[in-house]
Structures are given as C-alpha cells and as structure tokens.
Length: 206
Length: 182
Image (cartoon, rainbow over all chains, first blue to last red):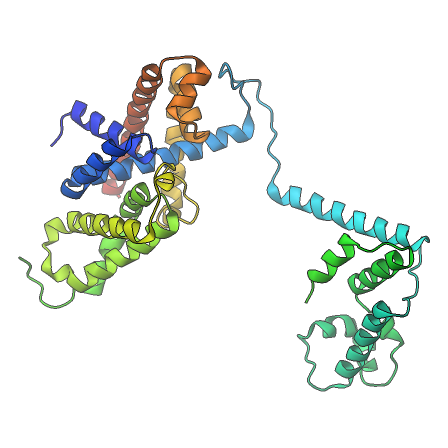
C-alpha cells in the first residue's frame, strides 16, 4: 500500500502520462511499470476519470461566462451559448431564403414560377412527369412511397389516382424539383453557366 | 488455481464487466487516446476473460483483466501504428467512449463535486486547470502565456489535482456509505 505522498506522486505521474506531457523515455518507463503494477494501471484510470470530470465541469462553466485569457479573471457572467439546434435552424432558414431569392431574381418575376424551357431542363421535367404518370398508374405504389405522400394529400386526391386526371400532378410536383429546374433554366437563359444553390438542392434529393 | 473448470460462467463475466468495465475503459483510453480503439480492446479483453477466466482466481480477476487489457492495448498500438502524435493527445475526450454513459447519475454527482472543488481552488490554480484540461494547452504554452516558470505551472497544477482528487474521493466515500445504508 502506498503512503499518501507516494500515492500523490503516482497520481501526478499518471496525469502527466494521460496528458501527453511525459517525454518519450519517461512515457516508456511509465508503461513498463504499468505492465507490472496494478497500482499504476489504476492510477492511469483515475487520472483519465478526473480529467474527464474536470473537462465536463469546465465546459459547464464556459457556457455561462467568459474570462480574460491574459489575466484569467472572470468577466461578469453573460449567457452566450446558443444551442446548436437553434444555430442549425437559422442556417437552414437563411439558406432557404437565399435559394428563394436566387430563384425569383433569376426568373425576373415575383409571385409566379416561369415555365420550364425546352432543351435538357425541359427533358428533365418531362421525364419526371412521365415517371409520375407511370407510378400513379402502377398498382405497386404503396402508401409509404414518397409520391404517395404528395399524391394522397387527402381523400379527394386519393380518388384521383389512376383516373386520368393529371392536372394535380403538376400542382404537386415537388417545389424543390421545380425550383431546381427553373433555377438552372433561368440561369441558362441569362447566359450563366453554373448555379450552386439549385445543384445543391438536386444533389440532396434521391 | 481456480475452482472452475471449463469456460467461465457468462453471468460471472457479465458481473465483472459491470464492476470493472468503466474503469478498464478509462485505463484503455489512457493508453490508446482513441475511444473506438479503447472500446474494441475492452471487448477483446472480456472475450478473453470468458475464454480463459476459469484459469484465474476470483481475488485476482481485476488485476488479470487490467493486465490482459494492457497487453491487448499495446498490441493494438503496434499493429495500428499509433503514432507519437496520437500519444501526445489528451486522453480525456469521451466522445464515443463506453462506460461513462452507463452511469449518468453518478457522473452528474461527480461533475457537481468537481465543480464545487474548482470553485474552491485559488485563482491561479483554477486558471492552470482550465488552461490545461479545458483549453488543452501544454504546460510549456501555459508558462509562456502567463509568463511564469514551467516549474511553477507544474507545481500549481499538481496542487490543484491533489485537491480535486481529494474532493472526488469524498464523493465516492459518501456514495458508498449511502449504498451500504440502502
């Protein structure tokens, strides 16, 4: 059994080891002791535990106040932590607003979406339309298919499936698809060769 | 050597995991500096206990576990080529680490105890602790920033750690007393 001083010395050595503060020779020597002595192994575990607890406690303090890094004096407490969830929400809203602005600005009009131009982008929209026709006519589409959610938005629309009335298909075309196609088409007609926001929208959807 | 013949009873292995798993995980984190590797070695250690635990004596099983864990960890370090740079990392990151999350109530109590102990530290010691553990600055950097000798920085930290360790020990004793009363 160690005396108190010996125990403190061992714990201090263990702390330096887990903190990566020992030089290479000292670290090797400590590890050799670890191989032989259970007390050294347990001291290592204690050092990790204590430092984990201190890190957790300090992070709680850091959420509530800041300090002068030079003097270490604690400034008057101010709550500055913002939950990451809140930050992400604002970022998402900002991104969506930027996208909408880009779409409307590129279209040159507000309030209405322009028609899809012919060419590659028109082919994309046409392919989507045809796919939706095939799927709605197919009996394989089940309630869990993503299209079901857009198609079957109420009993009235459910009754329209397979009846040949496709006007609601255009209305229910996902806004992200329309915005993507329109955005690229708009930029293409304006002579722009790239559009990052619509591409991001497209790549994010499967 | 042991009264058991054949593989160790799974319930005994499970009980050993409950009793020593968390401490073992911290120990492995101290060696490997990587939570995932620590978890992997922890599992491998208890697999060995299940396979060969019958060769051990009940009184020395904890030491046996730690010894096996140590050798497994060193083997992983050699095999994975864990670099000196990794070993210079601090060992107390808990992301992905097992064990601690299994006893949230105890952790809350222990963190609270350490918080109180931190508030009781002299300002210069408190500052050292925050800069070394929370901000993860080396003692050399801390000494330079505070314009103090390296030895002074080390001495302050050592004194602080002794006080914090004492406070944590008091918390453990109180918890054990409550468990005995229950």
